Amino acid sequence: MPRFIFVGGGVMSGIGKGIATASIGKILQSKGFKVTAVKIDPYVNVDAGTMNPIEHGEVFVTKDGTECDQDLGNYERFLDIDLTTKNYLTTGRVYQTVINRERNLGYKGKCVEVVPDIPNEAISRIKKAAKETKADFVLIEIGGTVGEYQNMLFLEAARMIKLEQPKNVLFILVSYLPIPKKIGEMKTKPTQYAVRTLNSAGIQPDIILARSEIPLDEPRKKKISIFCNLSKEDIISAPDIDSIYEVPINFEKDGLGKRILKKLQMKPKKKFDLKEWSKLVNTIKTSEKSVKIGIVGKYFKTGRFTLTDSYISVIEAVKHACWYFKKNPDIHWLSSETYEEDPKALNELRKYDGIIIPGGFGKRGTEGKIKTIEFCRKNKIPFFGLCLGMQLAVIEFARNVCGIKKANSVEFLTNCQENVIDVMPEQKALLKEKKYGATMRLGEYDCQIMPKTIASKAYSPLKEVKERHRHRYELNNAYKSRLESKGMLMTGINLKKDLIEIIELKNHPFFVGVQFHPEFKSRPLRPHPLFREFIRKAIKQH
Image 1 (cartoon, rainbow, N blue to C red):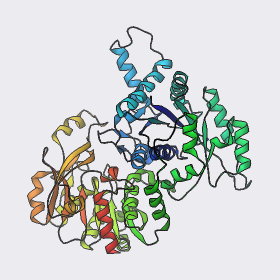
Image 2 (cartoon, rainbow, N blue to C red):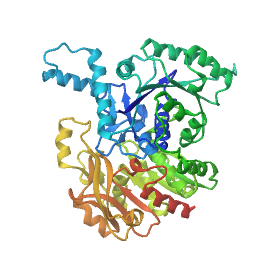
Image 3 (tube, rainbow, N blue to C red):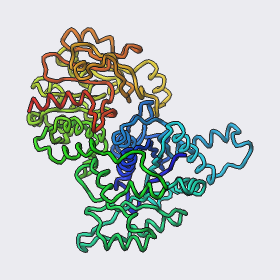
Image 4 (cartoon, rainbow, N blue to C red):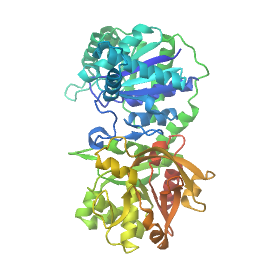
């Protein structure tokens, strides 16, 4: 019988429910249990695929092609497992299923109601995830904040499953304790109200993870204990720290794993083991020499603020590779639009050990990225292009090396005369019908690696790999021979569809573009091979 642990948030959003959920999973894994994680997002979108990254953050893609919330990326990185569509729920998905079932007489003429039919569908999906993964623990993160109308139905699902299986269900509240500067005291009242709001939904939290700038002290623990109806041992301190990968170790200082198992009347399957994880945390803390990496994008500016969540998997992949070499990642955000307005600003690229151009959509900022790529190519700066980054590298090479001056992508120029990047035939029909959601090349595809290349060295000894995709435009094979004749190498190919997956340039320390998203498969203890090779060259450049 699997155990279900629901994780909800109190006081405000952005306090780290996803990291908390992933960390709880890591602790339970270290005690010998099989764990899976489910994210419930309260928005009506069917998936995250059509949302602007500036508004919602990165769209993560699972191996089966589900476009989902970035928290699934956190789960995969912490737990070192591959998740699928069964690990992701949204209000839109749940309602869509219930309505389709009703239209097909699936309810046999019954009156279909928001409660209990919507929560029942959520419960059914959670149980299905447990059954298919054969997990000992299913961690369910409920998006949003307690008290919001949007997540009430999912709190109702948690209440109903707790009623059905009282000994197999826990509810953990991640709540924020502010320290107003003018007052100078940590305040528990917002958390008290969050717990009361949760109580009004029929749920009493079993454990509170107290998020704050600094560790929780005894007076605060005592106050939360009295007013929130928990023992002091069930209030776990969760202070701000420099690295998210330290969170599981921090939680264990307060005995979180023991408290969970005690409440569920379980014993560890093996002795607690986070040795490799502890080594990683030590490396993160002690690495002094840094590698300076510039990420040239357009999804990180929102007013006066920098939203790094838009590229979270890229950031983490860079970190993983740097830590592999016991180096400190020094990541900088560079706006591609700056290089369009002021070409002289490109000279600042010389101070970086490597440049990454990540994925994205739309024309805005692309000419600045093309100028960046040209500068990296000519000045031998290690360059790594991801998805759109590869497409722009092909356009730059076609224009400035092959002499195809009007080279472009049909994504940016509908009547493009020199479409070196083109849309696949099956995508043209979808675009005509204005079908944008979940209609791209999504999920894992095979990639054959050509020998004696940077890619083959990175992936060695593998000669064929599977990588995750999220795009609808491809390198146009009609230009392949012209590109190759001038020195561009096609070093990764999907043989089934005859599509170019990896390009490289000769006589350059590291100039690689990939049509896929390698960042989605990077893990803290197993950096992605291409990111590892990129950082290796960047260190040499430094």
